[in-house]
Figure 1 (cartoon, helix red, strand yellow):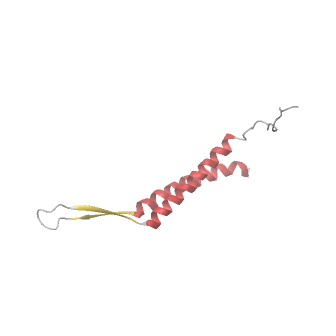
Figure 2 (cartoon, helix red, strand yellow):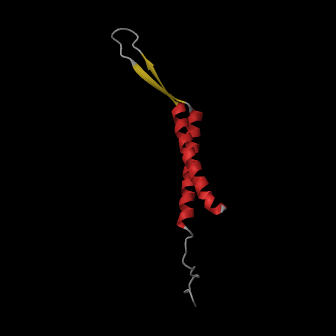
Figure 3 (cartoon, helix red, strand yellow):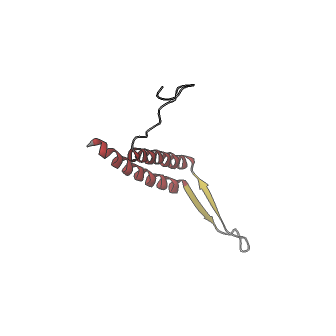
Length: 93
């Protein structure tokens, strides 16, 4: 019962972490609009990035990616590897 619940919990956690990553990224980017200083001067926008928010978004996305890889691994099943061939020999000798 618990083995079946693990991929479901991982999928929910992965999606939640993607939402957290997006919200952290949006919180870490701030755009400020500056009007013209005088009549003939152009206005401009400045974008500033907050390091801790961007790092939090990156970490959340990486953990979500690891969970997604683990979900794939669980559904793919065990991998059958060919038997090892001893050095200088043939399998079955």
